[in-house]
Length: 504
Image (cartoon, rainbow, N blue to C red; front, side, top):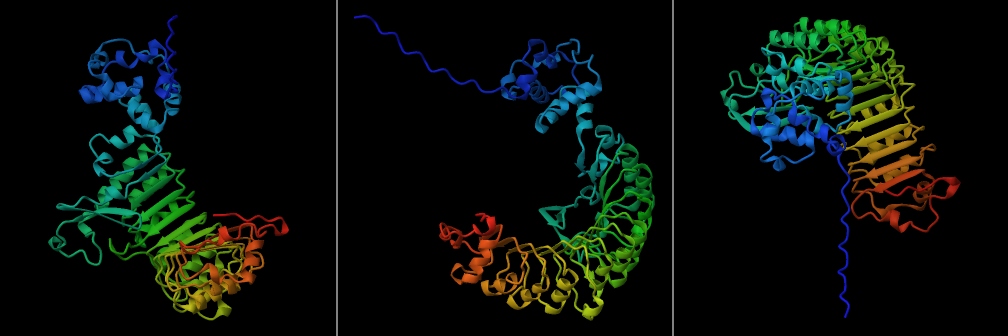
């Protein structure tokens, strides 16, 4: 019998080459790294393996026995390439490979550092050290955050990292060791850098990175550091000042191109101090007339400070107020913000205990968006005043607010032009309370209801169902048991007027 030939083995599909494979496919290029002179940082076997893996597209475990190739003397085949050309080549690498490519040689390390645009400083000695390593390694930074490095590590760390208001700090193991005690905050005064140290660091940063566009720092009473930044960094557009006071805002007028500003006066549980009052808000208003976006966190003030900002900052379009300590009557000053488009209240325990007569409140004529997040909405009078000021609003977003029941939410019917409404995490509001308000919004096009447990599918009335059918977009998930969208399938909802029904 004739012998049968064995069936051919199936061909395995070859994996697509990665970035390193595409770069070093040719033999001369593949061995460029191995023939370069060794940089001192690469003399350890561990660093040699990582550098070779980054250059040749191999895992570090594949390089056992080949470490000598890196140590071999030979010409640098990338030397004829200019820095600009090699920089363009390195910029095409994914971010993880860029970090590994910096281990190849000193020149590549310097060029990779020029690709870095944003940085958060954790160790102050990296900025204000003997070699000024930060500006030497990363001379073209656009965004720098030096707030974490401005708080020195604890002497006896507890291993607990506390994050509040965007600031993360390590806590001491024994708070009673502080003298005086850290109350009302957990960070004592001694853990903040001295004004002289901050000024010296800002001077180094301003001279080494003149192209800065965003800077976050802990404000100090001295004017030298901020004035140096204002003189050297002419393109600075965004500034974030933590632990800010009225006195630290005196040099703010030197930032002629500033458009975005965030002031953090105090962070509950971390630190407290004099903070920002009407004096500081007035200084800000007269010094930053080109502001487009302003955020006030943990700041004090009243009608005088808010109205001064509205009168002077004519380009202001977005105002965010977090955990405010404003005096009663401050909300009447919002009417002076003629171009304000977005108003956000975040983490406020109260809105305005005494907003005053409604005749003196005024309105924001250009307002488009109102955001309420993690606020306590227990005062009907203050909430009614807020909706009066924002009567022309188009988008309303309420998220995780306490005290919003049917009676409180009824005040929102004042806003007749609402097109988009989002409600999330409000467990006191019922379906009846929701329907009573949104039925009066004739322009409503989009509705989003998420995690509002007192709303049930069986409480949806025919009138509300008809309203749902007219919407362009509906996301209805008041609780985990809601099956309304599934049960409405095939009923013809969402086909009226050419509008569509979007399922979540």
